[in-house]
Image (cartoon, rainbow, N blue to C red; front, side, top):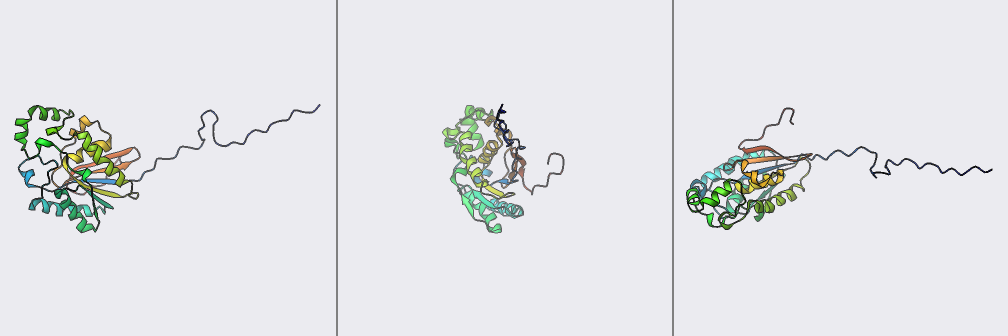
Length: 241
């Protein structure tokens, strides 16, 4: 009697039939350790008068230029790899000071402009509260409001944040991007990059003229490392590093 043929067992391939998954351990997340410095422009006359600037193209004051020169010398110490800026005069002049001390060319993008706020633009804080009390109050409550008939904060984030993300992707590991923009645009961009709910973005306090915030890349996304800073960030030495 001839013995039945025995089919040899298949060689182990590291793949389970039930799941199709490989037996190899999962790859570790890639950590590129890139940073984004979001830098607000220097002082303008409308800042001093507490007028809502929005997308109105206002020049820096002489003090604003001094602020930009001082901050540029500090930020140059970070050895940034690229400078990205709004094309409005106040941000372009601020970015130019960093370009002068680093030799980096500035890339301007209108998507980084401040929020367009329609009828609010050019009005003082007190005038806005007087003429648009309900609109102002709703905005401060975190409701989606087209201030003065202009843009929603989420629309600002949707135009600004992708520009930052695309530029960061071009950086080498450990690279640093400086984004020169406006207070409102920076806040909404940070909120979008951190994945915060839009109604909570107001919890991010405003930036002083020529101060900045720093986002750091981690394996789980972006983290806020510094906010409204006017000095170079110190290393985090502790358990949360």
